[in-house]
Image (cartoon, rainbow, N blue to C red; front, side, top):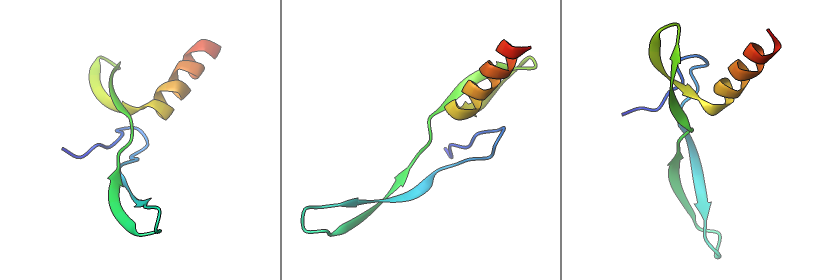
Length: 60
């Protein structure tokens, strides 16, 4: 299952692990996606968007 945020469309990115001898091992780095109820529907939202939405609700 692909992990994408439904609001900002951010997804997984490529990363690299480096050993002591500087050998590169490629890996996928996923984002922290959590379910959130928004407008009566459950959607997958990254924590960056979740914090921003909480801040916007707090100000209003």
